[in-house]
Image (cartoon, rainbow, N blue to C red; front, side):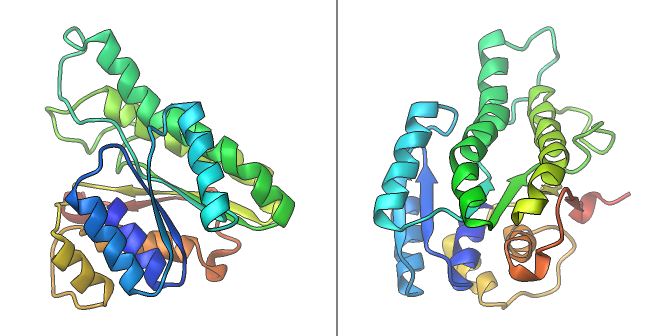
Length: 232
């Protein structure tokens, strides 16, 4: 999802800070694809659940690309289904840090600049049905949807406070979404998609791009569900 969102925002004219935790060939290839669209890209390694690393990334972004006007909170914790009695406390804390603290830190780091400029877009990737998990699979983790639900709550809580400053805060809540290759992602970002009965990363990316556009200037505090094949 993160890759398709980055490609779609680049297609629409944005320079991109491409955050990653561990660099591999996918980072290199995605950065090259963004550059081929004529956009600037800054690949940057940072654990976004660490305040110092987030601050370092924001400083590097400002130096290389300028102001940060759009934030997409797409990094998340691992999916590890376990009974609550079996969950290791350290794992539980790690998942919630990646889901909640990372979102908090990125918003905290970028909101002052958005306020000063009177324009900003913040979009978090939540989860379909995460608020009560009625639609989740029976064998599902507990910490992961809890983190997504917290993102929904933060979205609804912060949005009314910032809309008067020209800043919108929304979330997209996708259901199960299969991975795609880079070639498939690039084909989709060009608008070449056939019929399907489930979400694709491009579906999520298109909604994020709309929320980041001027057309969505009065859309805020929304959690937009994309259930795909899990619709009931």
